[in-house]
Image (cartoon, rainbow, N blue to C red):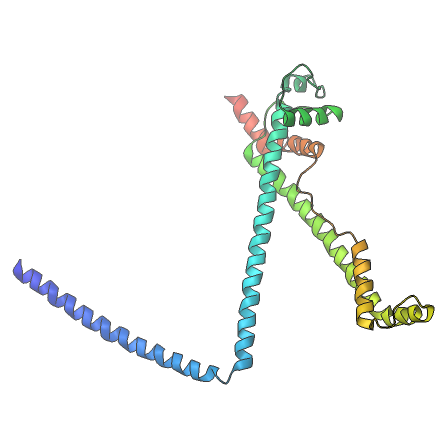
Length: 247
């Protein structure tokens, strides 16, 4: 046992000394490269600033992408919560769904405020109820498709808005000298106002009149009811219903 312990100590000492020499060699090599880099960077002011700016832009792009991804993920979760609420109200009138009758107002039933508002809106538009709830997979598939469509429509409207905005700024920049000269001849402009301030004022006034498109995360109740029916008619829902009826 003593010989084994002594042999282990010798082996451990050899490995430790070899590792130290190996690491020291690479540390000296890396240290030399760092010293050369620091010597060269003193004469590379423009390159250093460019690399620093590039890094800042990459970090900003990553932050924007993560924020964009988190934003649409939160909107999808909100749509799922709204889907479940509308579906719970619709399935409560399963008896009328079997008779192919639209939803009723349920005046004699004690409902909370939010289910009451959903039920009244569906009954007002004569929406058909459902007999059973949709599967979670069908719900996610329908909502993902709908949210993707809403995203494309919103991005298209935003792109069109920025096109009009850039075109307006180009027109203002082109016509600013002529409009300023006319205003000076008519006496409606202070002569001390420079061309740059005049163009900035015209741009600010015109941009305030433009209405930027906004995304409405809440889906209308009737549209959500349509999505509920679409999820109930999906292949996953029909397959699950057939499987349950088989057993």
